[in-house]
Image 1: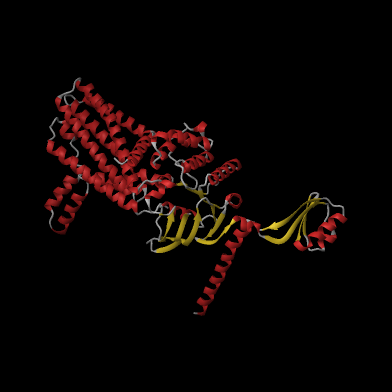
Image 2: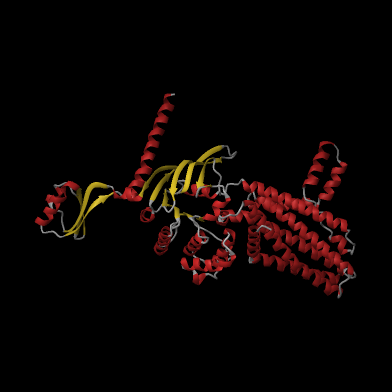
Length: 258
Length: 323
């Protein structure tokens, strides 16, 4: 990695880690994992299913909230507070700034996910008293959640490169919700004909396919995740993130920093 | 050698709901600044000073024109490692300490890792922040932030330093320190381009000044030339409770303050005025030629063109009525 991208990424990570709001969100997610134990205890025979379902959903939702919350502020806050001026008046190219911000934020989310995942596994251990072989699939679900964060971060950066923080948050969250329904959207596109069908297909393939990245229900039931899906999802998430970041860079390169 | 060569740099923004109406922020600006020079860019708020600096820093893009900095095109990435910039009312990363911030900026500026820490400590000492180096910036006062800003601008030993309103919001001691620092930079042979609307600072520090108003460069001149021109008058200050009538008859405009009289009169009556004081047994305090001040030059440049604009607007209105 370009060294300046690395420095910007590390500074973004350091600032995010020192932000107290982040700790509140992590604490809340860990509390929810604790609540999963409680719900699991009163759910006879399906404790594991409830803990995995609730725990991973909490990790995913809070991670997305953090990604949007910090992601949209990454560029706009630097412009508003003019910290960007002292960065871009140095030998730093604008693309290095955007890419550095992206890696800093995704790095933060990976570390957060690690701690939240620890909470989920502790809850699992508490209700089941031991780890089973199928618990390894929980790690795959967590990996897919991290891939979702990559896409959400990239989208947050993309939208914040040309709109206000509030609008960027709305657009990103809306795409996250629509992306989670993308399988339904594709199904709808298949049964629709004419211009409507063409439009539905375009939208279905344009929005990020978060449905494919959500395997929480399968792993909660102990189902295996095919290796092919892991590969496809990895390539898909990387390509989609790269496209969104490229869009953010293209817009940011031409932006006047008033 | 030329440090900055601005060639008809121009900036307009599109405003209005549909962003179709252009609003001129900077009219074509042509300006040259030599190396080792301290240049003051003067003008009221909203005159176009910050826009010019942002254009030179590559933060906004020009509508037309170009500039060369240290012999290179302003878009050349190599330029950035040789310049330092302090934005107006700087704000930095809240959660970093002053030391961490300077270290980060040192990394981005390409300061070698080996001597970076020592350089950071040296800069902190230079701006008087060694004791607060480990304190997070959110706990810093405005004056302390300004000092951090100055430290980051000169951290990588740039040849050319751009300072946007460096004295803004500082107390008298803070202003004095910034002035001393600019003086030091001049002594080190650096070129300093700073914008200000505080004329006394410019008069004390600058080799040359440029006056900008309403996005237009109204005049450029050497401070020494502007302030050395006498106005053909002298100022005499002496102890007295009243103004002698014979002095008034020489055309003196006099003011009494306490037991002192301050009289301004034409230079050719200097000997006659001194003779009056001798005759009246009045004690002379000082006699100095009245010189032009930067303020007079500034007001003249800003007002003269304002007057011209009013006239041209009147003319346009007259034409409009005629049509």
